[in-house]
Every structure is written in C-alpha cells, then in structure tokens.
Length: 281
Image 1 (tube, rainbow, N blue to C red):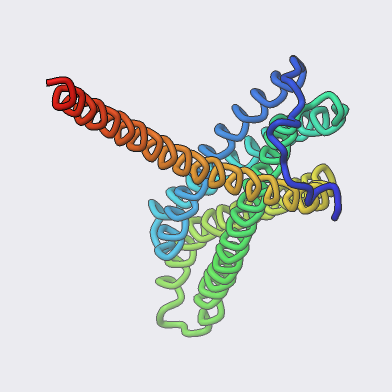
Image 2: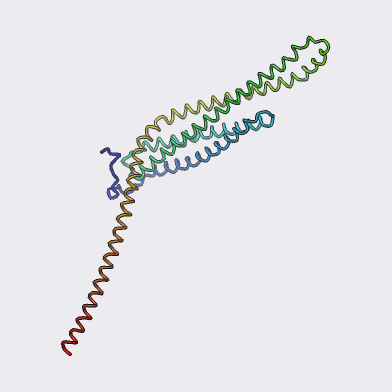
C-alpha cells in the first residue's frame, strides 16, 4: 500500500505546529481566490452581454456598445492575468515549504488551494477563448462590411459615362465618399484594435501556461491524496458516529439493567420483611 493510500489515524496526528509563513500564504491565496472568482463572474456576465450585442452590429450605437463591452472584457482579462501571476508566486512559496513542518491538516489545506487555483485557471482559459472567438468573428464581419462599402464607393464612379447624369453623380460621389472614407477608416481601426487585443490575450495565455505548467501534475498527484484523505475523514466520522450510537445503546441497556436490579432488590427485601414478620409473629 502506497504512502498516499495509508488511512489516517487520528491518534497518530502530529501535534499542532505554528507555521506563520504557511498561515500567511494560505490567507493570501484564499483572499486572491475569492477576488479571482468574483472577477471571473463579472467577465462571464460581460461576455454574455457582448454576445447579445454582437448579434446586432448594424447601427452606430450598437457598434459603440460592442466596443465598450470588448474594452471591459479585455480590462478584466488583463486584471485577472495579474492576479493569477501574483497567486502563482504565493503558491510556489507554499509548495516549497518543508512537508515535514506541516501537519496533515495543513497539507490538506495546501492541496485544496492548489486544486481551487487549477479550477479557476481552467475557467479563465475557457472565457479567454470565448472573447478571442467573438473578437475574431466581429473582425471578419467588419472586414466584409469595409469591403462592401469600398465597392459601393467605386460603383458610382464607374457609371459616370452616362452624360445625362454626370453632374448629379459627381455631386453624389463628393457627398458620399468623405463619409465612406471616414467609416472605412473607423472599421479598419476597430479591426486593428481587436487584433491587438487578440494578440495580447494569446500572449497572456501562453505566459500563464508557462507559469502554471507544473500545476496539473501537482494537482493530479495531490488530488489522489486529498480524495483519499477525504474518504478517510468521512470513514472516520461514520465510524465515530456508529461507535457513539453503540455506546448510547449500551449505556441505556446498563441503566435499564441497574433499574431492574434495584426493583428486584426492593421486592426481595419486602418479601423477606413479611417472612420475618410471619415467622416471629
């Protein structure tokens, strides 16, 4: 039987050891996990809003709303990347603590924190992919719009050979082209900005993968031990409850037995008393 599969003997538990560094790191990581979880919830909600607005990208107002939601998502992703980098430093410091200094409860807490970090990191990666996917789809949509507008701008110029409408079309081109050129430039700027965001997010994903490349292995090995510890704890708890029920049952039995003996003794004394009275009467 491997060391990780050994049952926990509560009587053999190490006495509590004061490890201030462990307590400080665990508190810092726990606080960071709460903050990360809250920001992931905000990011998920903003992605849902972005998906809805991306379906209606036909008006200037909807385009501005999309840009605003994209900027919020990118800012949240950047903030979360910073939080994960900070928590990775604390995690590595905790993992470097000598295992012999920690009791089993502290090891259990450490491993639980590692598993929580991995779960939130996986959730973050999934949300990052959603944002880049939406950005890429919007870029393709804007590129197509830009291409169509460019063709519309050229089309009036190609028809200027009709003498009877030359002046009218020239006026139309002069009025339409500045607006179109401004719109094309606006679309190009949005595409470039989204491409920068996608590149920034992709770079951040690679950086996080490098920082946490050992986390999956650690969590897998520690997870087996944590599951075993949880199983042993619940098993011990069930055994304790079962033993408690048996003790209560035995206690009731002994109390009832003592009462029976007491009343039997009382009856015997009464019978003996009457026998004595009869004999000496």
